[in-house]
Length: 156
Ligand code: CUA
Image (tube, rainbow, N blue to C red; front, side):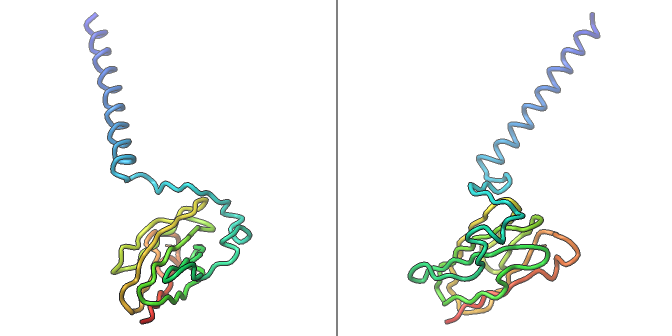
């Protein structure tokens, strides 16, 4: 009879631990935004080259001082890998991966995101200073990971 009581207590405890852990994870994911990137748009990674807009990667002027960079990521390159925009431009990067998870980081800016295959990631950055930035991959993606980079030239 006594053992029975202990079993009951342990059962309640273990269920409680699971519920608490789920609660913490859920709070982090939804309230603190720490979950995997939540993308609304999905894409077939095998069909990137034939799916608009990624069938035509490049830099597009979409408004006054507004630009879109349609970019594909794959081991181990960004396409395009040379981007030129004017100073003060608000640039929206529209990105997807053709293979594995890559990271996109432009040091000295707030631009830092993950790009997950099957999803379309958008991130906007305004470049106020006329200078050359380097975009790097900061998510290990294979043997050529540390060579994966692109340049962003902001022309004054
Ligand atoms: Cu792509 Cu690391």
